[in-house]
Length: 287
Image (cartoon, rainbow, N blue to C red; front, side):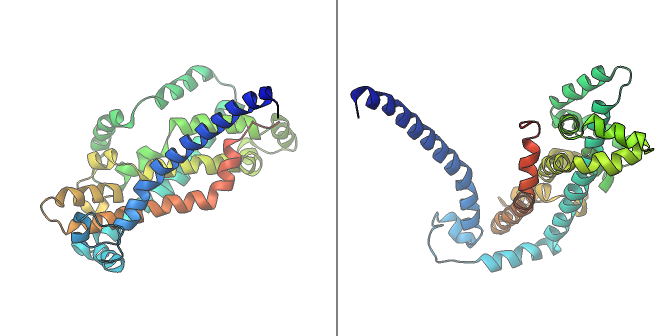
């Protein structure tokens, strides 16, 4: 190989090595907390404070799991069911609502459509914590504070989901197909439900996953709305236990075990639905 060829190859190899190092560091940064969580969940309370997580002694995974569901009369199981109801049902209904709104923004003409869509885009940039107090006041006026609906209803509408719904409607649903359905005598609802909605399947899955993650990790809104422990989601319940751990150290192992179990539904959802999610994220990339 000539000197010129070697000089050209060296920057390419150096750049590739740099990229590999950056990717490896990013992967470690992402996986190390998960690895710590897995190892710590199998340790006794004394082993947690001894910083000896890699040893095979003091293995207490099953006992920690049993203690988790027995603590405070089995509150964790109720919290877990609450989170599943908030997240799964909320994400499913929210995905249908948001994609339908996005479809309407893309396929129909009405007054001030772009101005209204501009408001939707502006709402994407508003932090959810800013909306917690107005939502609390509205729920208080409606008599919904400290009820299931105080947490469930606000998560059904997501401005980012509406934006994605419009993008997916533009990329997946040709106007010609809708016109053909209308010519055949189908009404607007029938056209959407039987034609457009099937084409929007990848978009629905993508919005569902975004909604599921956001609702499952939602913490501030339940903290503002709820005072009844039986209505807590997992995130708020574990926070309460972790706050009590400074006074009652027996909470530490169950908080760590509960945190490990709280990650599993999100991992399962992404593993089962990732092929739809990938195709949804690449909408419009290939013509």
